[in-house]
Image 1 (spheres, protein in one colour):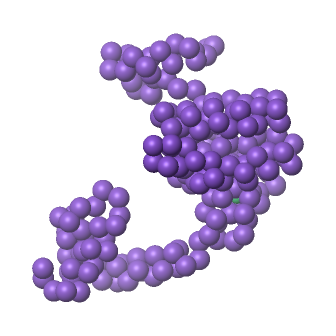
Image 2 (tube, helix red, strand yellow):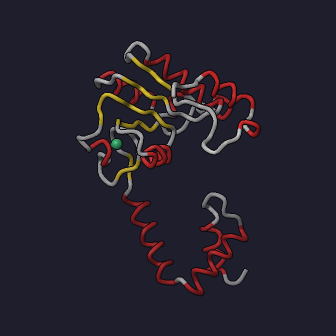
Length: 197
Ligand SMILES: [Zn+2]
């Protein structure tokens, strides 16, 4: 549009989630007109991250080294293992500050309609890890979606003989949520999973 190199930048920015052509053009213009040095720093950070961040050999989350900082941290609780779909879920749970155990990142969820089966996830590695570890609680923190539930049931079936306690994250009313605005399935689950005060 403006120049071939400008178009190339706009196209590259559009690979980011929720960035359409218009936002990408705004970003490109902002970077070129006011933020050249920050733009170069961004390009450098991207290059380093894309080339050097890898998967942790134990939990399959992102890591700079073979083993990630959480797996390497001796202060974490070895008796709890929390299974999530994506590394972003690890970040979310860490930010809650409510969990001190270990993690395992599956790499997605089972989705027969999209042709994603157990072989496409780190399912064998999870089974092997649980079998060789002294885990007393396996927390299934897959998504509250049909696929997330299916994945949780699959893992439960595969590992119920190996772990004493297999739990699922509670589902229900969001903080600040008014009952009148909550859908009936969420309300149903909130009533089933109610907790003592
Ligand atoms: Zn790890």
